[in-house]
Image 1: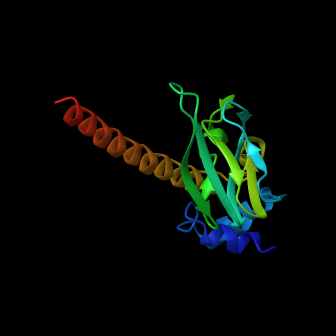
Image 2: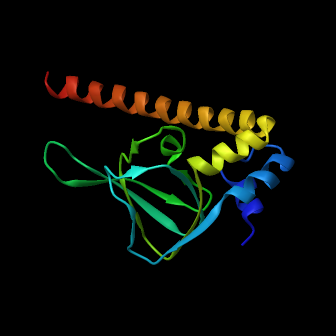
Length: 158
């Protein structure tokens, strides 16, 4: 598997210098899952970021009111998930992720990131900038969605 190519083409790391990608790739490891398999459950402790090398993953969240599972998103090759778990010790997964088809992931855990950062401070700056940008984009989307739903709720109560 061409981990360097997967990292270069991923939504998360596509703007990072080639030299840093080359070094970063050594800290990723491969995980394969069959179709309809659970990668992790909402509430699990996690310390790892994943990039989808091949396959499709479904993001599922339990509705605290009804207890029903709600499908939030489908992620395909090049997408990533788990960035909060990579930087937050004792992070609890915020959703369940399940494969839709045979799926190959490459993962980076907190220890691997720490080793890379200890070894190459320049790389750590670039990687943390990418992670911060990704988290800021997701927070912005979440805020937009929340504002939209609050508007819908206020109109439905009129």
